[in-house]
Image (cartoon, rainbow, N blue to C red):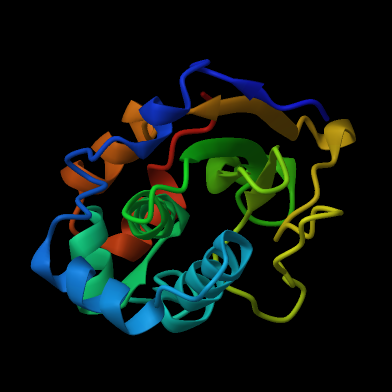
Length: 202
């Protein structure tokens, strides 16, 4: 699939946003832990991706009780659904002047179309050294989900089955989708929100 940038200005993918708040002291502290000056751009992206994937729990997987949204809260509480985790990954990478955007898939929420659909969030990162965008999914691995860092071939958490009306959206967005942010801000019960209120399309 050919990815399409919402903006032709790379600097737009470095913006600090309300939910992508990389100036927050908690995020600054974590950045000092994760990165040092001798690391390459590709090394930094891999480190950030694996940190968010592995060290921040997916709220549904742990049946959490807290809804997080802002990158700093995701880091503080170490949990979030894909919408929240993608905010944190964007914040960490944008802090390093690495352009990072938001991508989406429409997926079956559970295992059949009858149980509904949801938007799934992941990130796209521009590697200047390779002059290319790559998509990374820091949702968090579990049995049946094995997302990996790769600059050659995508290794995402989920593949799309178009027979079941799933789809890959090709656009790399500058900001998180408003529907996804609103649902996080409007709910306090993560399990109820996940089962019944996630947006089903862009």
